[in-house]
Image 1 (cartoon, each protein chain N blue to C red):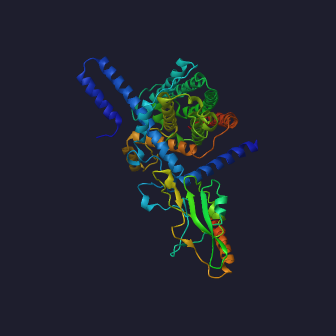
Image 2 (image 1 turned 90 degrees about the vertical axis):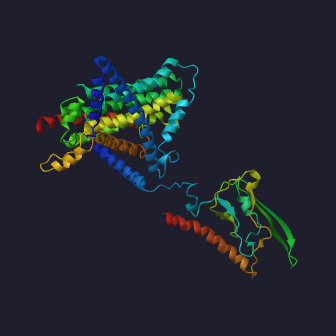
Image 3 (image 1 turned 60 degrees about the vertical axis):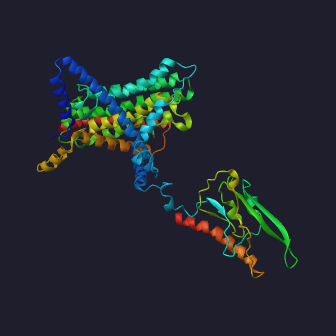
Length: 181
Length: 359
């Protein structure tokens, strides 16, 4: 009998707690953005994945070694890495990137490619306006024409640098998670 | 210059009687005008509640809601109304045609009959007779026949299950709603809505006795369950029953159910306002020296009080709807038969003792 009444009143109390939470949500501002009207004021979140890009530095150099790990990890075969073997000045065989093709039409924006890239050569940006008139325009070449891989000065550096890059890549999302909590 | 609606109505009456000789013609014209007024108000309230609910629901989910048609999207409902009027009514094979097409009319008829029994402002009501509360409770139950017919005549198992659940739910919760209002009838000493209004002139019923608060809470839960809206929306649980009893309806036949649902929301809130929160009576402080305050409150027209309080209860109902998850059918019936019914019966008893001792 006692349980019957305590159940009822604790139930009502819990329901009121739930209504308090939704009441707070009611008065908090909307997260929806009016897209075409406020196009210039849009501030997508930093982690919002909208388009894969390959950042180039001022000398038109990128970090991609054409290893193809991103293409292997892509669930949709969205990424095609076209590479060729050349012989460098020391006579060693070397693989260079010819074309880094990215088909945004089949991309599911999972972010696995950026997660696994040992060089940190590719990243997702916030540009989400992808509307084009033909499907062929959806296939983009990410390495700019005439670009090449950024040269590392010391022979010892390549081992250290990728590791650093990899650490940053893993550390960054973690930090954001902590911030969120 | 008074803002009350009754003065305008009296002016129309004087205009008609001074221009037309025969009394029966005047009565006929007035009946037609009143009928048209009720139907227009009914439709407008449904439209308003649809946009109100969509906006409130959007704010509860951190969205903006309709915002394209007209300022803040207020004309969205008119666009939707035109759309639903020109949509095709898809005929079914192998079903009971007569019952299928009669069901929406029964639903809307029950809802309209209840609507006619309400009071909207001082002296503005369709009918005023000595069993007003009883009439409201009685005719608001007619809609469930339409719901059951809709489920049965659709020849669809989802419809049938939805209708059966709806029947079980509405008939159960009707008990608590009625019993909680009986407590007020004991306190007010009358079933006539005008008498109840007069009894609330100084102090609303909600402030007259602690048991009215209990009765109001029970009434709000029961009335919310009767409108088949979440968390009691298991008759139309879209995830398990597609849409329940109205799954086979299209076009304006579906629109009738939809409008009926929203108007029932208004009607339940309005009954709650009339019976518990003083209806169109202004908020008065019954102490000496508060005459100035009371005069300011009286300056606000009575329909503003009525619709303001009704809107408050509707908002509460929407808040509940967009907060809680859906109940299971056994939990729902347990809530009614094991919790709310004993509470409302005990409440009636305590209220009778209160009236006998205190008043």
